[in-house]
Length: 178
Ligand SMILES: Cc1cc2nc3c(=O)[nH]c(=O)nc-3n(C[C@H](O)[C@H](O)[C@H](O)COP(=O)(O)OP(=O)(O)OC[C@H]3O[C@@H](n4cnc5c(N)ncnc54)[C@H](O)[C@@H]3O)c2cc1C
Image (cartoon, rainbow, N blue to C red; front, side):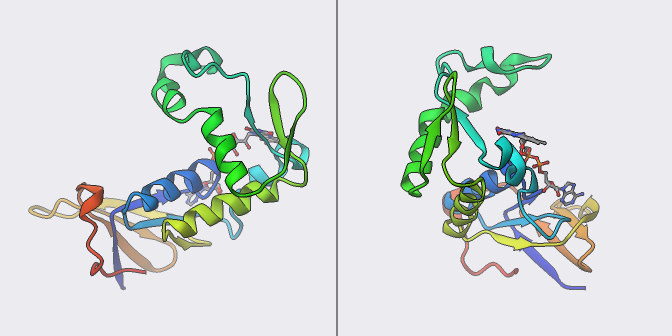
């Protein structure tokens, strides 16, 4: 069984996983993104009636927690304050995606939710993210001391190790994997 080494392993290539993997990759981490489905972002594909309501222009970036429904509204505060709807709109515009506002600040693609998926995949490409699909997690464990590195086994009959946390800027191009 071969073992590949990555700085970060993201499980699930939905909207969250694709975005997270792209961000980590673009910050210099060697990232593996896996999904047990052959397709990425199936929910995005059907979101917004196929046009993806990708953000809301009216979100108050100074108090984003007021838009978050949950037992702990403050949970999402930091993330929503640091990456605002305007940041996402700027990303959409950089990718040349045409969009329109429907009502109450809701923004939708003019053409298709596929444009958002293509954008997320392009962002992963820009971060040199490795994708394994279809691939499901079989087991997660820690190596014995002294390494204590997390090891994940998956159904592709391969295993991979997530390296111990380190500075993103200290990326070692020589690490094996893939
Ligand atoms: C009909 C519909 C319309 C929607 N419209 C909108 C909209 O217009 N705007 C909006 O913002 N939101 C919308 N949503 C909600 C939005 O789709 C979701 O909030 C968003 O897609 C969730 O993304 P996610 O990455 O968190 O989860 P998911 O999209 O569920 O991604 C999880 C991924 O993990 C993978 N996975 C799960 N288990 C494993 C495993 N063990 N191993 C490997 N991979 C695994 C799955 O295959 C999947 O790809 C809509 C949802 C639905 C159902």
